[in-house]
Image 1: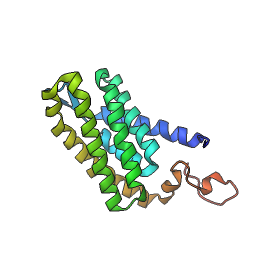
Image 2: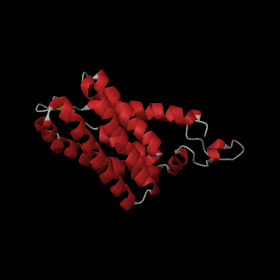
Image 3: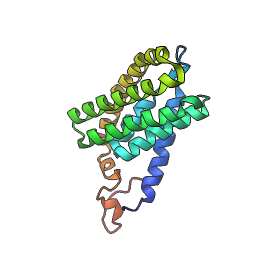
Length: 185
């Protein structure tokens, strides 16, 4: 079993908080479902692509679920944890190569997982009609998340190539103090 690094815990906490803020920053209510559309997908895709599937799951699931709890949507928090957690996990797993095809496939699979999880989770909570009504807003949310999250990841990777070493388990010179490398902070 691999030891959990302090930097991974700190990074997870920052990404969870970032996702919660993105989720709560702009909320567009969806009256038919008592839910809302938000920017959580931007942070979820960025976390998954930049830092891998585990942190994608933690940032997306816990961050967006926490925003539901804090924002008065506690009934959706368990579904959100699973929907956005799977979205970040699958995007990070499939998009780990960082090529445009891998990122696009990771986005698409993450989108399907998020939309499908919400649909199946909302049927017992709200009924079939509202669950169907939520598909289009969720689709728009995840498209916006991909349109912003993928270029954001690519821009950060281009501007700061050492970000790739911050993936948990990466063999990084940052782990060896005898190496002469720039520290990220």
